[in-house]
Length: 127
Image 1: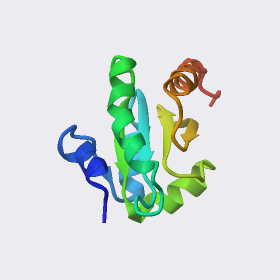
Image 2 (image 1 turned 120 degrees about the vertical axis):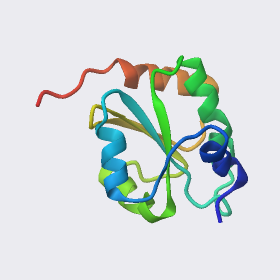
Image 3 (image 1 turned 90 degrees about the vertical axis):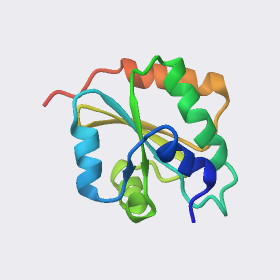
Image 4 (image 1 turned 30 degrees about the horizontal axis):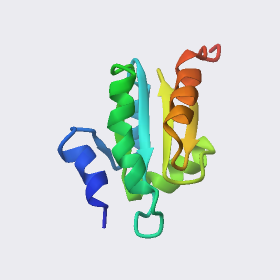
């Protein structure tokens, strides 16, 4: 069962719920910068609702420089393993199909701002 604050991201904010590897690929490979929220088990992880509340605020603070999606339970494990961002909840950043990095667990606002600024400013790896 998904936490109501995670459900709010898809229902009220319109973030796509990514349920397959193909959906993850389509989302992350589209032009631009993208964030996938990996909520984890909200019943066991009390930080999940906090990150679900902070994510729209971060998107607004960065003036929409990235779009957001939510990883469904069915793809969480594979996504965490393929990116190396193993702890949940986490925010995993991609640009034009390339992994930029992740921010695991809940953070202070200034930590989020600093880390996201670093992620958004890093150049893509040469192809």
